[in-house]
Length: 339
Ligand code: ADP
Ligand code: MG
Image (cartoon, rainbow, N blue to C red; front, side, top):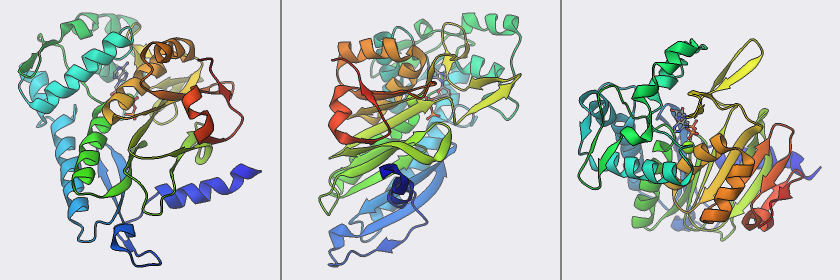
């Protein structure tokens, strides 16, 4: 079967070891790859750059990712986000930027993206190692603290929250971080591919002119890719699913993405959804929202907005693609949604 050799190939392409330099056959410095893996934003991040001969860009990216982690963490009491959550006010530009994007995507998706769910995530124990099903009454009591309508954004100036309302950028921070890294890599005239905890960001062109190959993981087998996408230029490929952060109780799987309508983990027929878009921030926000919406509502959203491509993986094993991905995709049997 054609797919069998893919995992090894992709592990080589995507899983990057500690910083090392691999000269290409011709010794062209622009084609030299350097790689580094770090832990930030509660996940492993693998960075591969081409042409970073003095290591300056890699050092800058590492510093930026660590700084963004410290700034945007909802659990670090010293972060800019925690300062907003405890004081109810922030003027930090990146907090304003993420809030503005969250409000825009929330509006476009009928509230499927909701960055005020932190008290509910906490009640389910997703912010700690003590995951559990909370009492229904305890969840209901959180309603008055939750909802995008609680956020008061004065664009470019400030964001304010009422007492008890807290923001969590878990659904879009890695996408934002990918945009920040991409800008730096482009500024330095380099290319590369980043995996920020499964958020893939390609930047520029591969030195040998071949397309970037990005694997879409099997929800039931982390070592296997169901599909591979061949992409050119700078693209974000972001997946949200029920298989990375979840717990099981009495045979039910509870995943870390909550439905704002129920304040409970999404229980639909989707295992995962992958979004391909130009902006990492948008791809990340949309992937979470599309997971909440389910495939049919997600298809309608795609028809309405048209600025992203998507792959839906359903519990029955079926895979659906938007038409723009059809010719870029190889792998298991898939179907293409109607335009
Ligand atoms: P991951 O961060 O695992 O890549 P996502 O981008 O889908 O996955 O973000 C999930 C995170 O977003 C959760 O861990 C939680 O912090 C937060 N979250 C959960 N449900 C929602 C939601 N409906 N809207 C916005 N953020 C959410
Ligand atoms: Mg997301």
